[in-house]
Image (cartoon, rainbow over all chains, first blue to last red; front, top):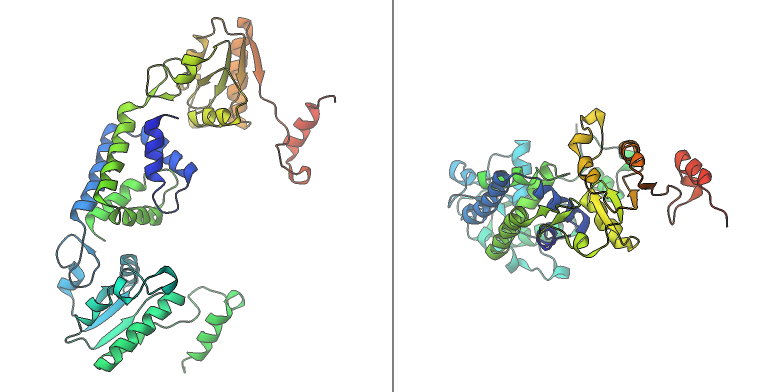
Amino acid sequence: MTDSINRLAHKFSKLPGVGAKTAMRYAYAVINMSQSDVDEFCAALRDVKANVKYCSKCGNFTETDVCEICQKRQADVICVVTYPKDVVAMEKAHAFRGVYHVLHGTISPLEGRGADDIRVKELLARLDGVKEVILATNPDVEGEATAMYIAKLLKPLGVKVTRIAQGISMGSDIEYADEVTLSRALSARVEL
Amino acid sequence: MTDSINRLAHKFSKLPGVGAKTAMRYAYAVINMSQSDVDEFCAALRDVKANVKYCSKCGNFTETDVCEICQKRQADVICVVTYPKDVVAMEKAHAFRGVYHVLHGTISPLEGRGADDIRVKELLARLDGVKEVILATNPDVEGEATAMYIAKLLKPLGVKVTRIAQGISMGSDIEYADEVTLSRALSARVEL
């Protein structure tokens, strides 16, 4: 295989989940693209680096200093998430009308990540006028640890701190649900 | 999600096997790349379009007019394959010391591809001094049809035409082999 193809495959292999064979498939596909397709691909790559910033309020991806959500919504309820993709998911659900705070990671001692490595202090700096902070990190070990850490920091400050509910998800089967999920679904049961 | 990110994800989604979620994951990964990584990615994309040609003898990918294999090897035995990636596989096996001929496709009436759409006439034009043509297209319906078509064209020209053997592959289990493979393995059995 030619040097140029190998070099391009090597670049593709830096993308998440892309192994050697897939990287080579992508490189072959580029050979079959038109020159204008490749030029547009390069322009799109450069534009993302040039235009995408982090919202100065919530940390989400934006092309303006403050993102559209922070510009347009009341900031009295903040929903804390781990990554920008979680904002996308929440917005798709149309379930939340407040603003977000993106941590860009979780607290993970095993991976050497502490509270200072994620956007915790930025959250503490934006609590004026905030009535509730909803902790919507993932229901896994690091997400829980991060939520509990933040809750401990926030509660003395008098702001209401909530955690999104855990239970069986829509369309799932009790028979196949894991034990932790089942026991949490039971303990958080609601009266009808 | 920002326009730039959506545009980049759209470009990634043109790669084979890349759906919307994977395309978005790739776009996020680019945000986290350094500027120089992105510049190198663009350079690699442009280099492939600028440098990669088809070998004027065998049709394989090359950066020179005639590829290295065609430059260095005897052309008395030609191994016909469907795609450049098949050349890579054959070379990795170190089993063949002749030259290749890349068809860049198979004959497939269902997909509207005839012999004129693949590099059959280029093969006919390079048979001077050729003692044997090995047909190494895939052992599937189109690969077989293509091999049989080419064999019919070549045999009257007096060149020896062979087809790579079919049988049970290394490491496989008779119990799980399909019926066609098993019956072909039996009919092509060799005396010990």
